[in-house]
Every structure is written in structure tokens, then in C-alpha cells.
Amino acid sequence: MVNANGRTATILVVDDTPENLSLMSDLLRDDYRVKVATNGEKALRIAAGDSGPDMILLDVMMPGMDGYEVCRRLKADPATKDIPIIFLTARTDPEDERVGLELGAVDFITKPVNPPLVQARVRNHLIVKTHADLLRDKADWLESEVQARTRDIERIKEVTIVAMASLAETRDNETGNHIRRTQNYVRALAEHLSTHPDFASELTPEAVELLYKSAPLHDIGKVGIPDSILLKPGKLTPDEFEIMKTHPTLGAEAISAAEEGLDEKDSSFLRYAREISQYHHEKWDGSGYPFGLKGDDIPVSGRLMAVADVYDALISKRVYKPAFPHEKAVSLILEGRGGHFDPRIVDAFAEIADRFDEIAAAFADTDEELAELV
Image 1 (cartoon, one colour):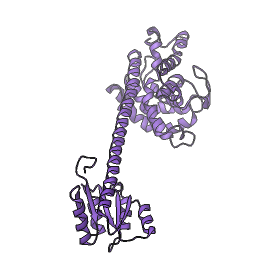
Image 2: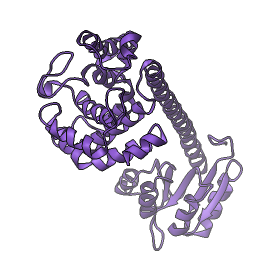
Image 3: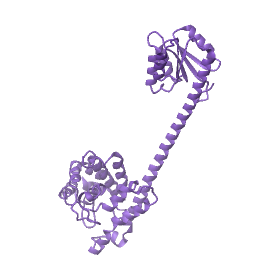
């Protein structure tokens, strides 16, 4: 009889009596590959070997380690727990059979054995094991396929976000590394706040990673701003600034439209991207835009992005201002505590400000900018 791998099934017979080993070997060798062990220790070694048995016929009464203890150890080991065990014993007390079955044995045969009965039971239990092995292998294959498809979906999500961010980058007068710096600032802040009692429930490891991936879309709405305003080499007029202030909503609407085909919009992988785009210009004291939200009414994602975006704007050169040194930027962020920014997020920023400086240096746009940072 063959096993699930298409090879002749192997039976391990464990008995301390040579006569019993010989009897069982003669009974089974025509249909199976037979291995023998004269004690429990040897049986455990064989069972845990590279080519373990498909079934074990196990005597109960053996010197040293008895069959019950061998069974306990086999069932406790993940490598051997699925090997079916049939007890062979001269004991006829129903209590002995109950103990054996409760330990995990599939059958209990009393000696002297009835050869046709042993052969039939061995065959039937091997058939069951073969089907179980095939089902287990199929389940493992299906699990690996699910994991592979999940990885594919995650890659598709990342590519979608990168593609959308790249679209915004082609029209913005910000430097290319701006989005890389800000997404790393956001992750650093979120990770630092993940143990804060006010943020721990939301800033799970999965949420932090999604925030990091979503942050590049914070200014995607700028694709809807006219070039004459977006690319203007100077400060905007009040009317122009009012138009510029529409970009958070334009971005959120674009992302929302992209979510329409998803089953659960509120839990979609673009949720944080939509929030960040919509709310990163809101201010803690309610003086921001586009809605003038205040305090905790502003989503955490928007509050995190606000600190990251402003810090990067401060350390970056613009047509209307020089690049401020790190220390000056930190000072200005601290001044915005409780006004522009969530006080708790500013406190976290102050604790890891050196990390922001490291990120800015790692993703500086030019050697000249790097020199200005340090």
C-alpha cells in the first residue's frame, strides 16, 4: 500500500519481545516497509527521523518507558503528532483501552492478535491517514496561495499610491524628496506615539505602515490647481491663495472617487490617504482649512501630517524664504504647540527631533541643501 507521497507505506513496530517483532514483521512485510524498535527511546528516534513511519504499532508493557509514555511524547511533538498509533497489548481491561485512546491512539488491539483483523485495521487507518495527509497538503498549498495573492494585493496597493503620488509630483514645485522626507517623518512620529494612551488603539503597527505609505498623497490635490498659481515664482495673492486652499478637498475627492469600486470604503487602504489629503492643513485651534476643524475633530492622520509638512517646509528653500536650520524649525514647531498643532504630537516631535534631522539629511535634495541642514 502506498502513502500520500506515492511510496510504500512504512510501519514501525515497537515491542520488547523478539518473537512479537518477528510475528508482526512477517504479517506486514508483503504490503509495507517494516521498521522495528525494541524500546521506547529507539522508537522515538526513528519516529522523529527524516523518513518517519506512516503508522506505529506500539506495545504497552515494556521495560523502562512504557507504550503510554511513548504515545504521550509522540503526540506532544509537532513532528510526530499526526502519526497514527495502534496499541498492541495483552491487557484486556477496558480501562487500559480508554487510557490509550485518550492519549491519542487510533485503535487498541489485544494479544494474541488475529492476523486478518490486524491487517484490516492497519490498512483502514492508513487509508484514513493518506486522505488526511492529502487534505493537509492541499490546505498548506491553499494557504501559500492565499499568502502569495495577499502579497500581490499589497504590492498593487503600494504601486497605486506611488503612481498617484508621482502624478502630483510632476506638477508640484516641491522637490522630489519632499514626499520621501514627509512620509518618514510621519512614520517616526506615529511609531513614537504608538505607546501613548491617547493614540495606542489607532496607531497599531499595521496603521503606522499604512500611514507611511499613504503620506505621499498629501498634496495630490495640487494637480487640480492652475499652473499660474501652483508654479508661481513668488507669494500668492489673497485670491490666489483661496484657490490654492481648495487642493486638500480636490485631493480627497480624487481619492474618494478611486475608492468607489471598493466594497468597504471606510476601511479601504486609501482611507488614510484621503484623510491626510483632506485634513493636513487643519489647525488644532480651529484656524486652519478647508473646514476649520478643531482639536480631536481633526483625524490623527491629518494632525501627524501637519507637523511633518510644516517642518519640511521650514527646512526647505522657497522663492519667498530661505531654508531655516533644523534648530529654528524645531523652535517654530514648538511655538505652534496648542495653536497650529496637537500638543501631544508636538511633545512627541520634541522628543525625536534629532530623528527628523537625520531623515532630512538622508533625503536632502542637493549637496547644497545638505550643507545648509548641517
